[in-house]
Image (cartoon, rainbow, N blue to C red):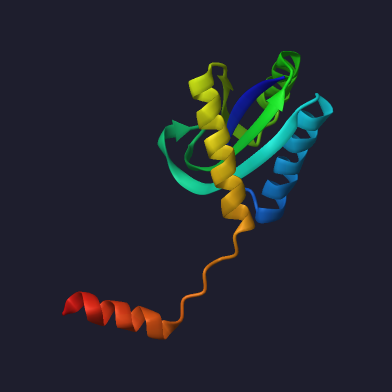
Length: 134
């Protein structure tokens, strides 16, 4: 089993439900081909560096997973024939330095998704702005 990162850019015209359906479809493809997804990072809709298929924006999603090498060809084939994915990139992590980076990214994403959102009261914000102005 090798460590991979899969970045996909999805059409920005999809609704939230359609986007979740496509991401679920992609997860099922990965798992059906023997992949174990360890982290998923939805980066949101961003401006593309250049226009792709008349789209100037795209929704970015990154998957971190381990899989056998044979699974990657099948996953990429299915991504290519699915219209909603306008770009994708698969990165394989091989040496120790790359694997440490992969583990750090997965740890960061899982911590972010597990931690509850910090609650900041309006009183704290006012006090911070007053103290910085003085």
